[in-house]
Length: 301
Image 1: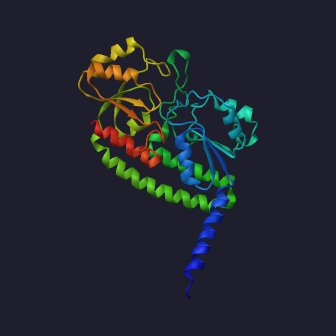
Image 2: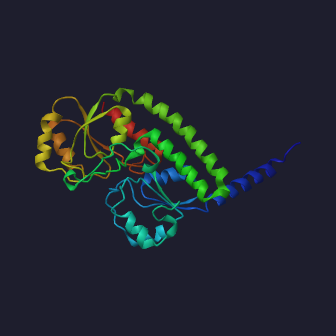
Image 3: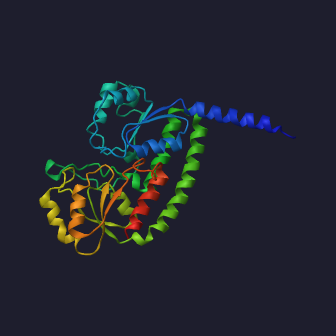
């Protein structure tokens, strides 16, 4: 049977439109850009709002009225978790009075709850600085963990919006296939980085370095959450001069002045890596984020 091409096009357009309308039923509030980007991959027809940018420290966000209003409308809140947002997310939840996204509800999704985070601690105290007992929350740079997060995220979307379950499953299958292919490519590209050493501002790239076999030899912060001091930076000069440090790494939202000072004293280059999606023109989605980070590190090898 021959099918009129115009009729086929109309049917496909109608089908796509129905799919988008079904996905559009969900209103997603993403705490960080990487979760907004993941939501776009897995629920492209949904209404997605991202609360922070890659130029902001996600530890320190003001619970503004505009964020409260956005959370009040949300069906699903997606965040890194592991207490990364402990300073502002509970306030937004309380002020928004949205029962759908309260603690323990299906509308609250934490990426760190879906995988085993690195660096979990049995106990913490103030003398240790701003550390996370539940583990390092910056898992956006571990492609294998992010794949498991994507699986759990897609399942949550289907749970909240069962009428569009087939669409979410198809979107996940497409993302997972592209992500796995890209991961294989990234691993091959990054092989020269194995065994390299860096000094970094914070543990923002803990998962990236763990994945690539890079050692973070020292932090610019004297303790997590404390800005670099002149005395601490001076203590790093001899280590940086040893000749085996690839770069001094700073995330896009971190103050680079301490890194520049240390670089001037030692000749070790500074790399400003995107902390998340949107930090530069090359990092406009999760794939571009990985491509750009690896390109910068390989440029410094």
